[in-house]
Length: 358
Ligand code: 57M
Image (cartoon, rainbow, N blue to C red; front, side, top):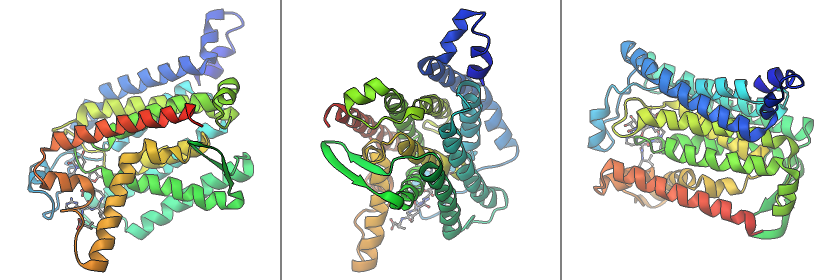
């Protein structure tokens, strides 16, 4: 909104020209999202407490989790509000990629909200069934992928870090691939969200990394210099990513150990889907496996556990997802969390270093 409002005035008031710059607006969006979440956060938590929107804890899990019973949940609503409000204020809303990413984020947010609503408010322990969740996530992803491919001419070529000459043209198979990226990322973040700050930490780090990658992809000269795909409209996504990283940071203020609030599915499903869609629109799909390596590790640990148990009757981990394994080994919760953050920072550095290694 600001770009449209203020740039039209900039012929008379020249300093308003700064609103043209993506970098300036990214900082503006980040500060807005952070301040908003810090201001609205305490009110939101108090409202959830008043309405008794608290987490129930499964008996099966590590015993230390029983003390978390009743912690307010559905904090994702706060995160989504801060990201959306800040993006609406600071992004160029004539950019279709902003709307596609916002659509994926908010629509998967509704799926997550429905699950939380049934579980937490209607006390239906099953919530939305696994199949129904995948169906809706896939439908949202197919819509976004089709718009990208058919309407906005997104390139179906995949490029790989370290292998400069390796290019795979997926053609129309780009659509199922894009669905896999969005749905996979959404569910992987959901599996990770099992300890205080465990999911939001890597979300902040990944969104921060994509802020830079979006800016680089949108800049013709830098993209050419780095030999990365140039997507002219992708630069604007830096504004969204900046808002996402900062809204996550604001949420971490309250979700850090011991958590005053959990994000719920209304947070984990859309944040993962947002990352997947950002990876697609900035043409950094393969790099998502590295940047979001913690989410991949958590998802793979569940697959390995289920596969091993079904085929051999034995477990690979004491409990999956893998963060429970370390808890049951006796690591205190904050140690597991901070160590996972450290790995996430390391992965982001590795991902960024591949920019020069193509
Ligand atoms: C959601 N949700 C947390 C909170 C959060 C297939 C199977 C591996 C699925 C998996 C599963 O259901 N995962 C998805 C994980 C839950 O958190 C809520 O859910 C939201 C995210 N969707 O925002 O609202 C609990 O996690 C803890 N928590 C925190 N701090 C936070 O900031 O401490 C969450 C956020 C909360 C709280 O205790 O209640 C969850 O873990 O349920 N299932 C599992 O993860 C289960 N694993 C399992 O059954 N493993 C088996 C097989 C199937 C692989 C095995 O290893 O043999 C474990 N989950 C729980 N207890 N709770 C088992 C034990």
